[in-house]
Image (tube, rainbow, N blue to C red; front, side, top):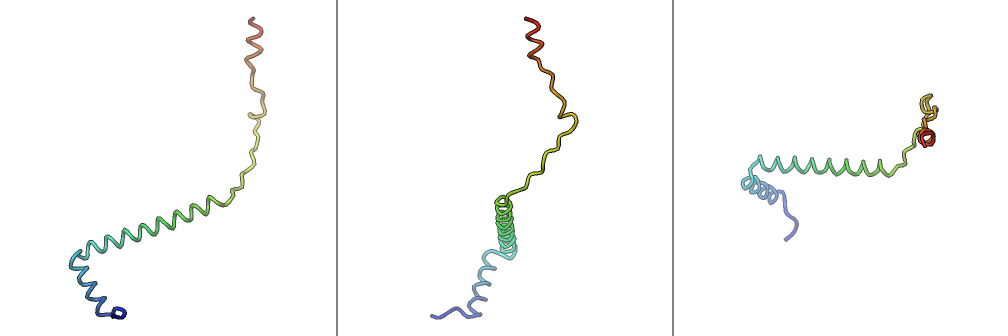
Length: 79
């Protein structure tokens, strides 16, 4: 029993198509393709997460430089 010839594979394909129908086989192949795409996308996301991201420097605006009014002085004056 050597390797299967072309005729053997054609008979197997015909039986599979008769059992499952062409619609179900095409759906299975579409689902397989979606799974492969999702797997590749997951690998790319993992590679992106592994690379260090450079943080942009924070720029202080005029509003950030103003002092915040303290409530401690007001409370001390009341007592």
